[in-house]
Length: 205
Image (cartoon, one colour):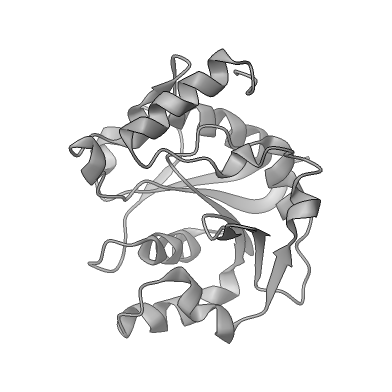
């Protein structure tokens, strides 16, 4: 049975380290990152939303394509758009540059939703993972207020809502290497991703 969450993929980054090339179109193990994510999301979610300010580039995929509602470029505007357009009470968010997101980890986060919490978010020694988390649709008004006030960091609205943090020890039970949080920020990360596949540290789709 699929989750009562929407699955939201954020593809609104500037990609400055890749000379503007869309990271979603980059291949890891000869599979584009967006294809990897869509294959995963189709197993988990009835509703899949892509947030991008360049929708024409993504028409080959079967998901609901939306754009930011605020003329700003940050993750919080993407979260706002995803929450605005979701038809579900909750939405799971990820970035379009996470090639190794594990189904088991996403399921663990979704299964940790409780009525008393607005956000369910992983927290490791490296900090919280706001782009691998579930947000309640109730967050929309608070997020919108922060954007109107130009408070653009995701964590800035966390003190206004109820958060459930998932401990690293819990996360490692389903993702021992925490590879789900690996993302492609720079060309060297793409090289590292291929090395992980070559070493069979990651299971290819």
